[in-house]
Figure (cartoon, rainbow, N blue to C red):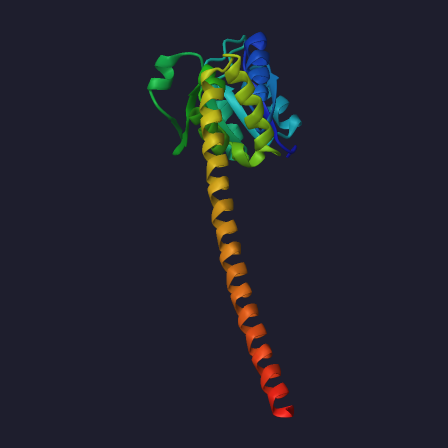
Length: 215
């Protein structure tokens, strides 16, 4: 399988490209590559297989000629051990819940929520076997600074606002832990100092006793 490649099977190429760009901008830990279904289920499956993806997102409604049954395509993917989820822009389909194929339950995500709602994105990442979002960030403090700048300019979307709050909580927790460790280091230092003073006093007493004996 190819690294962190995730294929997005969608009959609307323009929409798929927009989704891929939005996900990348929001830190989605996969390289999302749109793929248009062609020539029925088997041909589309062959196209996907050649890419050797780690994961695949399949649009529930694939309006093509000849038609591509999204359920059958997903079954092909699951049988080959490829992590698979469904996506759609139809909220009614999302409200129906997971799709169960041969005993396998596959979630259905609302497309827009994938890049505007952090909880939805994290759920999708987990189902696709990806790295959790915070762990995938090389320097979260740099990201935190960028988000604070956007908040100052009033340019945060809902997903970014949720991410900012989460990173602020993480930063606060780290600061508290550092204070705790500093206090522990201070306590240890105080103990060492006390022990050193006691040792000096003992040595001083011994030297004084020795001096007196010599007198």
